[in-house]
Length: 441
Ligand SMILES: Cc1cc2nc3c(=O)[nH]c(=O)nc-3n(C[C@H](O)[C@H](O)[C@H](O)COP(=O)(O)OP(=O)(O)OC[C@H]3O[C@@H](n4cnc5c(N)ncnc54)[C@H](O)[C@@H]3O)c2cc1C
Image 1 (cartoon, rainbow, N blue to C red):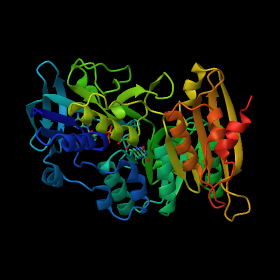
Image 2: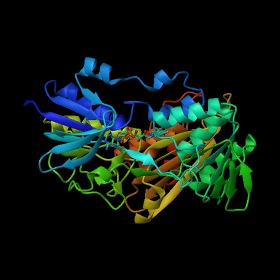
Image 3: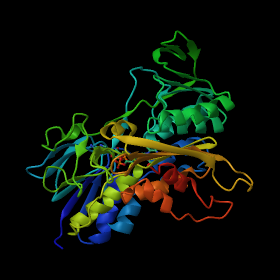
Image 4: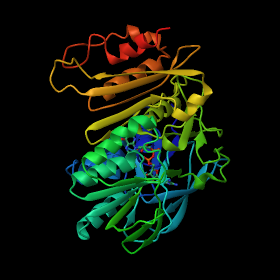
């Protein structure tokens, strides 16, 4: 293997994992990772749980430093180094070193892009309005809570990060309120199944208002579209993300109208020697012939692994596509889905089948109900999507159905799924089997 200069942009899920996987297969190459922020390889997904004091220490979220990466893997990570432009003809990146306020240039043979996305910000200029995407945001939120005697917290937006934050703020002993601009909360889920979220809020007397928007913030006083005026100690908004791809604008790398980068099954962009992984990349579904954008951690890690194989000269290791699996915990409930997005179903002549039953044998203690549904194509009978909500056993059903979709299973194949059964776990005829039986013509 010839020694190559590999540059990676972004040092968190997709970037640090790509660098590490490349080194695993290629001991020789010179690998440099540029990261614009102050931290590398932090556990994004753990941030809400750290703020809820579920994760005991900050260090648990930050397992890696540039020094450790250098020692263990001989990879150079430069923090506070922002790539500001890429010249894909000369194969050069232009980097702003924020520690010295200087600009440097660095040549690459191979470029791996994993710059992710950032939280959209609301247009209010007050010091107690936060978003949550990285360690700096987390530290700022934690610091504000502890130094300002925060009690009342307003959460704007009802995506999965806001929901996780709300739960963690509540468990920490604060008083959260949720507002969301429409009725469509937790958009990855079937909306009727999100009733569990509202009932969990009601059960704890946590105030929430849908079809509600913030129109003005004056000091700690917040005015809403409905005319309601309330005081909050702190506001955290979770109103979507935008891709960190402005620095690629003159690079010739193809982006879609939102700024995401379409890649092929090798994570190659349209430019030779330039790969893109993680949230920035759009790809395709595995079980149906449709484009997919699944900005979640699994895709970043899988992409990193495939890119490393490509760079190591193993072109046969390709990405077969997403099935779109996702899951969120909300107090006592778990909500999960897999398969195409709800909006993609319109591409199919589909049917839906559902069951609601105890997660395990009714006579065994602590049984709770699982609501499980699957969508399938009426002609091919292939599974398209599944969703589940309940207090336990949801993750298992959705993971099994993800695997089924991965193998392009039909709804009828579910009758033949052989479940590992004993009374504490399932039924001799599991909910997954029941979906198949119910869909019999
Ligand atoms: C609070 C929170 C909770 C989450 N929970 C889950 C979960 O439970 N399950 C799940 O699957 N996913 C979850 N995610 C999503 C998951 O973290 C992302 O899908 C994943 O981190 C994407 O990896 P990435 O490498 O594309 O982007 P990131 O991990 O965001 O890393 C991108 C890095 O690139 C850096 N960067 C950007 N532009 C430049 C530049 N020009 N130069 C240098 N560096 C740059 C950024 O500073 C950033 O550090 C969560 C995300 C958040 C924020």
